[in-house]
Length: 387
Ligand code: GTP
Ligand code: MG
Image (cartoon, rainbow, N blue to C red):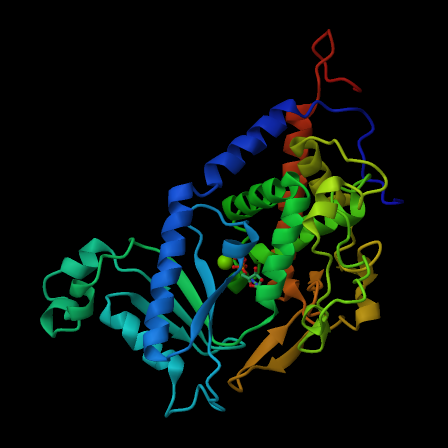
């Protein structure tokens, strides 16, 4: 690659790699937590099925991709086949009826309607909210359901969406990518934790979502580092007998290579295996985005050979207003351009404002400098090698 962000002298990344691995271990959910969330999914699904027979709950996000950190919230979609032309109309307002089911059980409930599609935000009750004297749950009988059921694990959040979307597909897509090389998940968890520590993971307040950081890491590992750590699964042509459902959805090309046996054999990476340590990959990730990637003119596009397009080519130049499902309006911005791998008209970086982008870049510079400092081997006279 002509994108030369590399160091002038070799660094010793042992300390950084050990540190990164300890961070990854400490943020990874335990097997108990994973089992507890599976059980919650089952119980939430039962409640939905009781309310709307035949409906079901489809998980997506970090629950599916495997990029969840400890205490991560659960992203799910409520899906049903019932022929209901207006599931959000007053008569059949499913989100509202579902909200009241969870209120009865003592959940904290918040129904967002200013988003692209309605989102029901749930949080399981804490013990203290259920037993608080004078709580509506104990006063007027609303707590009945809560008392009859097995208690829920405390303080678990779950977002329920009401429209099947490409998020389900892209979560499975990244799950497949994470099977290609364990360093992908490790880097994602490290970068996610770094972004939270440095307050750079608040899409509602002008910075980037976790999903945006996943795209930035994927771009680096597929298109930038040499030899690549990950193949480009979207560029491998589909076999002739591929069912149409694997080729397109909502008018978008959703094909990607899914044959895990070929992925494991390494034959998709003809340039040989990348042997870099986790510490080195993280350092080069920060260096690439601070010295090479042009935030002003370039757009990350992991489906494309090379992985970069100009914002100009995509027509992603000035902010515009869009109209959502509920006739609300929201802003599309292009200060940080990260093209969704399937929904290619969608900028995952749209939540970033000017200040957010500046802070992300500044923090990346700071991180790269710290890693350089702790990775520079000392020469015999105690001076850093390379002067
Ligand atoms: P954590 O919740 O931090 O554990 O990470 P996550 O991987 O679940 O990501 P996040 O909650 O940010 O997003 C949930 C899912 O929504 C993603 O995995 C995508 O599948 C999907 N998604 C699609 N487009 C967007 C987008 O523009 N922003 C976000 N945040 N998510 C998107
Ligand atoms: Mg999530």
